[in-house]
Length: 289
Image (tube, rainbow, N blue to C red):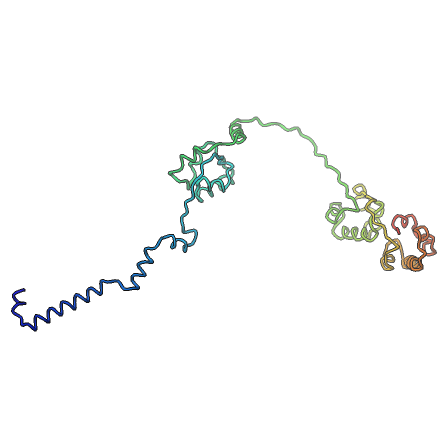
């Protein structure tokens, strides 16, 4: 090949050298990295921590240091199991096992669960320590007990009492024969008069029949200290005329007496002409100044 090159003319030899130089230059340019290639390379070799930070948290493996301490697998909570190094799968399996009534009777029972780290099983078993009460319960669970014969007795129902001035509709409906309608009527009437002084006032509620009253009477009680009297020195004419034990004429006479500035006592009111046929015994309990 060299002999053939020498036999070429001078111009042909110069052409070959120029061609070789051009080819070498092109190869050199192709091998050298440009600016963009260099930047891409720099990004690729950066610390992988920057790449991990951009990934979803559940795709990043975080290994926290494990803590070793005594625990009872029948009582240990989730936080403690995480500190001990239990995997999520193992924690779920333990919780499910306990919820179904499962009990760990000896330390090696925990090895039957799936999800435990095979390299860490022996350490976990060595940390298990059953509480004394649990151990006793498990010990006695293997002792067969003879069934005890309970004496036969007749259950005696405890009587209940409904206090009319404090009972709500739910309590009133516990009485046989009292439904939602009657219960609401009793409460509304109680609010109108300010409370019951006597159990017999239940008869004044519309819908309470003699038969029903006799049936529920033994279950009723009244706390008269809860009665709120009608203050006739401040009540409006409308409030007084709507009071069940008064009418419009009684209310008007009280209103006129109060307007004149001469209202001094309940006794004075009961002596007014409009109160001639009124139930004065009941009104003395319900009227106040």
